[in-house]
Length: 157
Image (cartoon, rainbow, N blue to C red; front, side):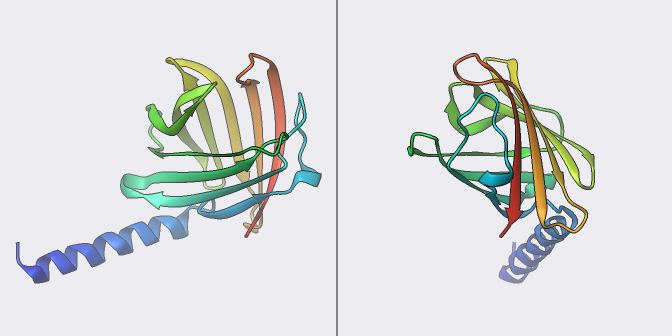
């Protein structure tokens, strides 16, 4: 393949990925608004920053930086496609080694965490129509087996 064709292919791919990002209101960086969030059982995170990026084939890449209630910093993430199939977590946790993504509508997505093939947690993520706020409702069990029902509110950065 000639250098010109490779360059053209690279430009087309970058335009395609940029176009997907423009269509997905989730794409961007989000910071947890601790004051507006509720963790049951608590305590919740002291801080969390989520960075969503467009990935090939209509996929999504998440990088998460978390400061737990104990002040310990952790990082996780994944790259997955909205096709209902399981994809590996970047850093498996006590209650998730894979995730499944589904798109409900332009502003709403669902992430299902699984551990050893069994669902452990479901997160419904809804971005406001103005694109400034994201609300994540989480139900399931945490790494200690406790039932949880969290409502996390994020502000776009």
